[in-house]
Structure formats: C-alpha cells, structure tokens
Image 1 (cartoon, rainbow, N blue to C red):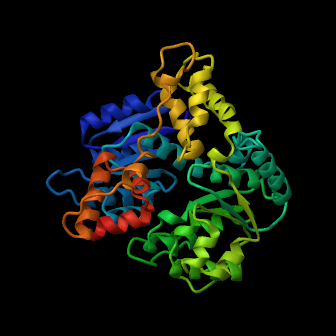
Image 2: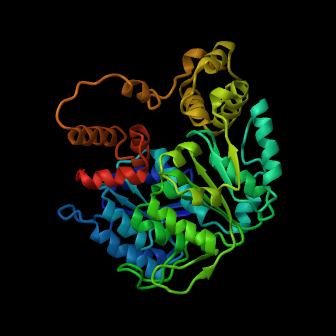
Image 3: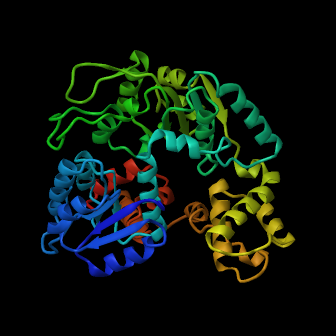
Length: 448
C-alpha cells in the first residue's frame, strides 16, 4: 500500500476529509474530489492505482446509476485502474451490477477503518505482478506452532506440497486454512506462478460462473470486454477455493465438469479453454457431514480430496498459545508503536484456560485490543478481553420467547445484526451462522 496512489470521489466532504486522514500515512498519495465530472481528467494527469467511487452523487435519487455510469467510463478509458465502489445501500442487484461492470470490490458506508484498509490491501495484492507476490511471500506463510499437532501438520505439508495432488483443507473458522494453502503453494513446484484465492462461498449464483470461468464481451448486459475467470488467472499455478462446502449442488456440477475436462467455457462462448491448475480447497464443514446430509456430491468430494489436511483447533494445541500470543504481541507492538515487553503469568494463564471458539483469529484480535488499550510495560490478565462476537453462541443456546412467525423472527435477527455491525456483511453473516451469499439472499427476500 505504501507505493499506491488512491483517488476518492464522493460528494460528501466529511467522508473525503476522514478518508484522506486515514489513508495519508498508509499510501503514497491520496487525491480527493467531490465532483465526478473531473474524474477522467484527474486520471489522465495522475497514475492512480485504486479509485474509491461513490455510487450516488444525487441524494434525491440514490439508485447507484451515477456511480455505474462513471465506473463504465473509467473501465473504458483506464482499464488498469482498480475500482472499489462506495454505497450506503447494500442491495444484491447493485453489488452484482458493479462487479459485473468491472469493479474490483465494493464497500458499504459507514465502514470500519480496518475494513476499508483491508479491502484496499486485498485489491492491490490481487493485482500485483506475480513475480512480486512470490518474492515477498515467506516460505512458512506466518504459520506459528511447535506443538505435536503442528509438527505433524508441517510434516504433512512437506510430503504433499511437491505433488500435483488436489488438497482439501479441513478445519474450524479462524484456524488459518488460508495460511496452509499459501504454504502448500510456496513449497510446490508451481511456486513461481500465480496463487489465486476465491471465496466461493460468498459468490452469488449469478457471479459464480463469470468469476470462475470468465466471460466474453456481450455475454450479458454489462459485459463490455472479455474477462478471464479465476481458473484462467491461475493457469500453471494454484487455485484456492475457500469455503467450498457452502456452494450449492448446481454450482458443484459446473465445478465438477471443469475439473473433469480440465477446461473452462467462458460465458458467451462455445469454445473450451484448457487450464492447468493445482487445486486446493477448504471448508469448515466436516467432510462426513457434507456427504451424509447430501449437501455435497460424492464424485466432487473424491475429485477435490486426493489428500486432506486437518488443521487443529486452537483448544487442541494449547501449548502453542504462549508462542502465538507473543508472535502477535511483537507484530502489534510494531504496528502501533508500542514497547510492551511481554505477557505476565496471569495473562498467559487466562489465555490458556480459555476455549477460543474463534481459534487463532480470536486470539489475534484479543492481543491486538490489549496492545491498543494497555498503558503498562507488560500485558496483564485484566488487559485480555475475549470477543463478544464469539460469545453470541452462548446467548443463542439460551431459550427465547417466541413472538410472531419464524420469518419475522429471522428478519428481525438479520436486521439487528446488520445494524450492530454498521452494514458489514461479513461480520453480520458470521454472527448469524450464514455465508455471505446466504445472507445476501435473505436481505433480498426480506427487502432489508
């Protein structure tokens, strides 16, 4: 991000000011503009990497058409610029339109600062030259652990990585399945080529084919140019399909066909395109549960599961908790310019006694909060607070008084979660126990 130039175009002056203050220390240059008529002129005069573009410039309309109009202009004249759409209205059809028209991602305002920074970083990372990505990736991909369970995991990685076998990574949310996938790629014979990650569980049915298989110009209303899918982008490299357990049976059939034929047929084309990829998949759903509940085709399970790797939950490797805690402490010391020397015995004891339903991710966030809030030279037990998000499971297990029909209860629960996280779909979906795609469908169903 330090080398990136970011342009923000929005008619809200307060938003422009706040975004400029947030991004100024993080990127090379921040340019802000409230008038979209000046957008193309600015892009002509400046080498912009990321454009944050509002979808509504006329408060009386709020249809998103203004943003889609300018998005089309930008992609026609400056296709190399990555566009992140800004909207206050998280409608499924609007998000689909912007992504189909060439947007790299979209973000709902008001947002959390960390969410915006992560979105920008992810878009930049996905569009860096492959050589740069490989050069900057450490071989262990940040995996920390010395327990017997992790030693066994590292042994398996060394065995399976150099092969061409398809790998299925199993494990609970927050255990680091994406880090394992990166490590396999880095230790493989394909490490000099692309590593492409796709969260297939978050793709709507309308986006599944276009994102994975690509499309030809004119394939649908907003297909203004040919676009390669993720399979082609990963050619001669590794394709990582995350949350594969959440795709429906129709999507499974299409994926199986591609894997069997080793070719994709882009939307709007009848000509197959040969692909050469090494497939890694991941899911938090136990494999046996998928098969027994008829949620997943067994022929596809066999296709993606030549070898499987089970990532242990943090509660199963408590010996690694002090090591991980100090690892995150060192990271956030540097990030927030702190000089906290370590964790006191009572803090480590508190961590080791906790069951960590959110696994390593929850431990990471707990240490980050402690580093931010602590004014002491070392972290004490009182500094360690655990995620209220994960504690929702305990609340959900309690009996509740039913009022109204089930659909109304579901609608209220969804609306409450969306408001609680200020429109952050990922966090709301996680609390509700849904995938992003499933939550989007319910938003559309209940017109929220």
